Length: 167
Image (cartoon, rainbow, N blue to C red; front, side):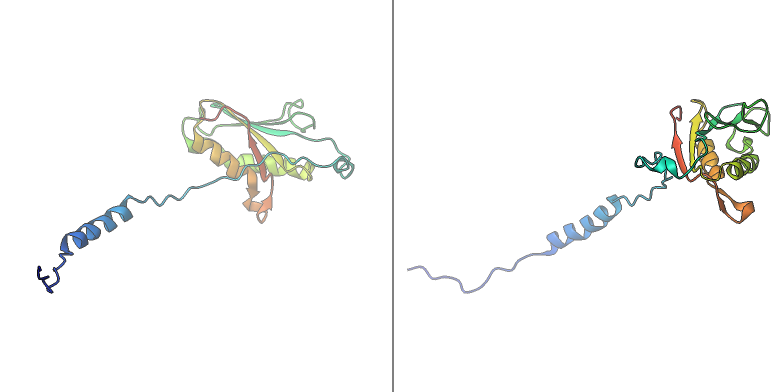
């Protein structure tokens, strides 16, 4: 009969520990921690058949067209009191809007505050950007039309919809 060695074999754990000590930092560095900035845009709310009874005035359907020449504020069904009912035109501060800071966001906020005073129940705004307008300019228009910081943070048009054309 063969005699078994009662001696146990030594396990060499150094290579596996080296592998683990290299893999853990590599996996931690490979994990991406992404923080996204989100602008909340919603579609106009669909209401029951009795929601039209609350407000007797016509819907304004307010829209802001963002172009390379400036900003156009107009309503399709309601009437804005400016220049033969065509709406408001806010030209760029530099003549041609080539940069994000070329748009007059403070004037846009002032004009939208006037519209909000005339139509206090309107909360929806449609943004119609030109295809050549930079994305940061569109975000600036959205920020300027959401709240009025001069009037104690008056809420202007929190429900904004982008209607095609943004790049």
